[in-house]
Image (cartoon, rainbow, N blue to C red; front, side):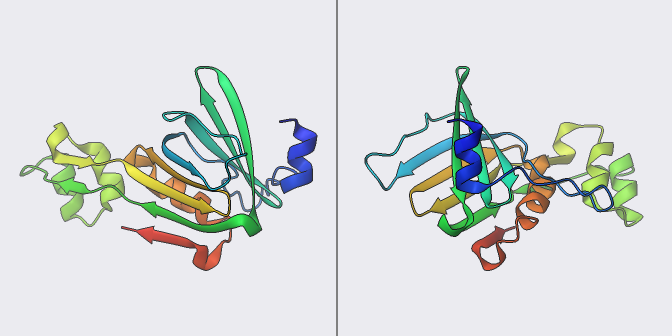
Length: 167
C-alpha cells in the first residue's frame, strides 16, 4: 500500500506539538489473533510485530512478519472498540530492600519497581490489546512494563467511550 493511498483513507501523520508533546506512535505489539469479517480483505500472519501510528483521520497499523511489511489503515469511524488490559502484578519486596524502602516512603510502584534486587520482588504479566473494527477483530500482546505509555497513546487518540481499560 502506497503512502498516497494511506493519506486518502486516513490522512497525514499527526503533527508533533513541541509545547505539549504527546505520543504519535505505539511501541511493538505481537499479533495473537486476527479475524476478518470480509472474505475479500487481506489477512495478517500471527506473531507479526505490529506498531500503530496516529493519523489525522484514524490509525495506521504497520505489521512486520519475516521482513514482509504490511500497512492497514483504520479510519476513526470504522473503530467499534479498543480494550487495553494491564497484566497481573506481583509485588513482593523483601524487608529493607531498596524497593521496600521506597514503597514505605510513598514512592509509586511504577518507579520503585526499578530498584529491586531480585526478580521475584516485582513482576508483571504481559498486557493485552483488543481492537474491533467494522472489518477486523485483532488481539495483541506486549510487555506489561509498557502499559502506562500505551495507555497514554490510546487515550490521546480521543476515542472517548470506545476505549475501555481493564486494570
